[in-house]
Length: 276
Image 1 (cartoon, helix red, strand yellow):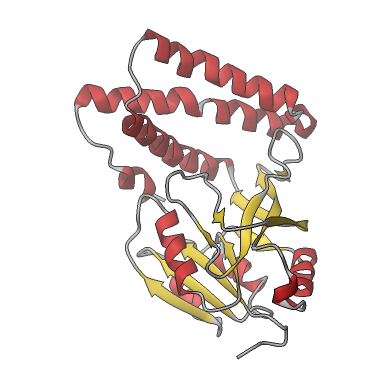
Image 2 (image 1 turned 90 degrees about the horizontal axis):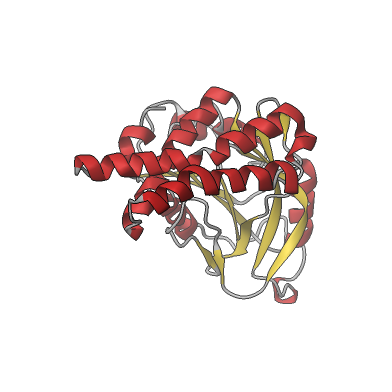
């Protein structure tokens, strides 16, 4: 059954302990989308309790997987509408973006040549939205026709793969991944563990050259690129902190990788991921 628009739209969200974010995310979409599919990975907080207060929400329970995109794909596959809007619980659809998407839905789907759309994203970091340093527009593919988009599940920062043409929307998606610096450091720890896992999967050699690369060359290059070439200095102190700490992911991940090889144990990502 079609909604008030010519086409229907589903929201797909994967969650794990998102009680601080989920209501804000749902408030921005529940009154104009056709359904909201939430795949929850055994949250220990009130995420599902809060989500079930919204009439259009359908929840699916599963395990919390180290590669979180697997659960995102489960949500995508469960959607029944013409279009899928994939969101993270810490993201908000602005009023301007909502109006732009609704205008798209009023068109005849046969007249829309694009199977997916890039959306510009604003990232909130220690009290401000970053405007430079490669952090804006931070485009991400989040809106696509059903059956035309999926996540490859190979990398934590990957984009959805779209079958066919991809267009652009003009308005921004707001991203509140790091509402505090402490939370940023928690995520930093998780993602450097995943980075170390990638080193292990690729069998990166442990020698002087790799040490030099990951302890000096890559972090220095990253900092210079984000803070100077991409003008992160325009964001002031938040811009410096972001460039500095994001550059540190290289030596931190290399250290974790070295430790894992030295101790001959396997990576247990859940040790980092579950301690929220």
